[in-house]
Amino acid sequence: MTKRLMLLVLLNVLVSEASAKAIQVLPGHDTLNTALSNSTDGDTILLVDGVYTLSGQLEIDKQITLRSISPNIKPQINLRGQDVYIGGQAEILIQGIKVIGGKNTYINTQIVLVNNEIYVNNFSIGDGNNNVSSAIIVGNHIETGSLISIGTRTQNLIFAGNSYKGGTLIANATAGNHILGNQFDFYLNNSNGINSSYPSQIVGNRIIVSADNRLTEDRYARGIYVASSASVLNNLIELRGTDNPNRTTLGRFEGIYASGVATINNNLVIVTDTIGTSVSQASIGYGILMYAPGRATNNMIVGRGMLGMAAPEFVEMRNNLCFNNGNKLTDDNPPADQCVSDSRNIIADPQFAELTNFTLSADSPAVDAGDPELRFTDLDGSRADIGLHGGPLGFLQYDSQRAPSDKPYLYPLFDQIDLSNIEAVNLEVISVARFK
Image 1 (cartoon, rainbow, N blue to C red):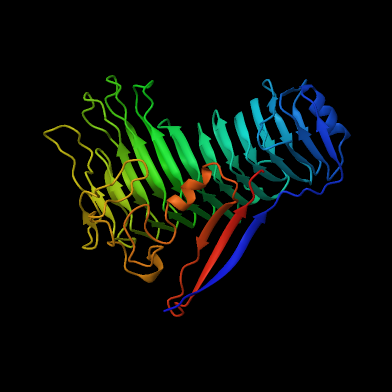
Image 2 (image 1 turned 30 degrees about the vertical axis):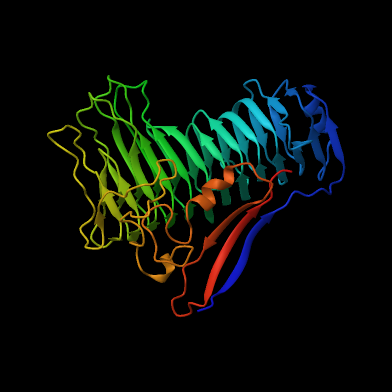
């Protein structure tokens, strides 16, 4: 049967070449602040290769574009321990810039950040008095000492194609949070990778949690925590163990923890790397833990020391695969395999073809073993696979967009298919132009 594809473009962010005037700024001390003082709404400030230093904080309160003069260079703004304040009623685009040495960054206006490198202690948007209609953060590399906080003064967040190292993304935009195709790297050190208490779509993210070899005491972490309505789809959450002989336990870890109504499909939660031989028991928690009405389908929970899945009886958990689960790590207490009791769940070795993207071998028991409902169908039209690459939102189409390219960032988001009209498929697309 021929299907009709109905396409809705949700957002298309383009870099405008038209502006009131272009101001080219040479490197040096306070040359950038002087240019900002002399600019007016609509101006574009162009930075050339080199280092820009400031005598005080960096403050932007005009509707301007601040970007590199070329996509082939990243001019460096060295804040030398100062704060950044971006506010007013302006819409601001910052693109192709490297920012280092910042203490705190406060953004309280509509902002677009594309293809930047940002190294600051803390980073917040919408935590002040001004309402922020949208925050669009795409294709950046961000490192913080603590967290990125998207506060409740923000209405809409798009956080996509970024690599983020060091802390938690608190995503509390009140109208919606799109968190798509990012890579998160952080330690199992009392933190979450993604933390959202408002409606969210969390799709195609690679979340790497490492046990910190510097620590000997227990800590906790969660890959994804959601406390409101959420779609958590096709994410890889990988806990990397420790080989530190002084560690006796790893602490508590949950891959996905949902206290709000959640749809959790086609995720992989996995423990990898060798856990030290002195570790007698890892009190690692569940791969997926749900407390509110929802559904978990086509997920994989794989790994020594981690429990499988848990939820109240009213939560439907089916067509999932569990393997090598349990919380005992000694030879006389081998791991158990724990999936929620349902005949459609599978306990079997997933037989990965490789251990980077965790694609499946041809004879994997997860192939064509997912939920047979039409809305879960793989991109090739076959019955859904269990795991990352199953369903219409296969992991690699999100994950791969962080690689260098001259094509725009493009993130499809399928609505649920109306089973009464299977010829129509509604599709939302988030499209953001790269800096070129």
